[in-house]
Image: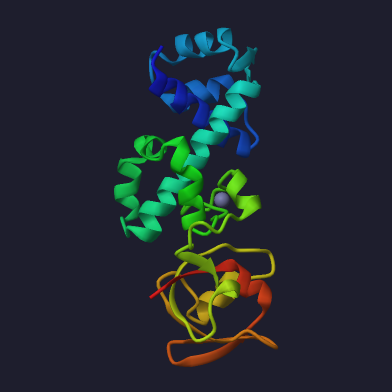
Length: 215
Ligand SMILES: [Zn+2]
Ligand SMILES: [Zn+2]
């Protein structure tokens, strides 16, 4: 059976699961490939998934592979989008190949290099890897949270991971948006940044959700 189609089905099942769906009919409709029903049956036989009525569930083996594919796909998106400045449209066009761009072996290195980003450019969660909890410092990350940035350093905001308290609209109104150049003036007793020649004090919660790349 086509490995590519199996991978696509597993990735789709993963993102459907994130939205709380496990519908067989939805899976088949979204995959849009005539071979999908047959491949799904084979995947069931080989122990990747179970299918009963309209419910498709990932079994342990399928779950692990879907998680890994999703992690690689979303990290590759981050790499292309934030570091290589490839535009989103171009990324969509190569999206199906994304997960194959990163080999499993280099995935954690890329994750560390990117500062263990929690989400992809579409704001979908990137499944965590071993590197994210261990924080191996073999690679100096080129993207860091503002809270870990060096005082006096200047960086470009590459992405912002919103939290409940971060009030994105308010940040945007202050010019704190991806692409803005930001200078960290002090960390203690509070974070002070300079953006567009304006000096602002921000909460540490905010400093944690801003990811910057040194410029
Ligand atoms: Zn994405
Ligand atoms: Zn990581």
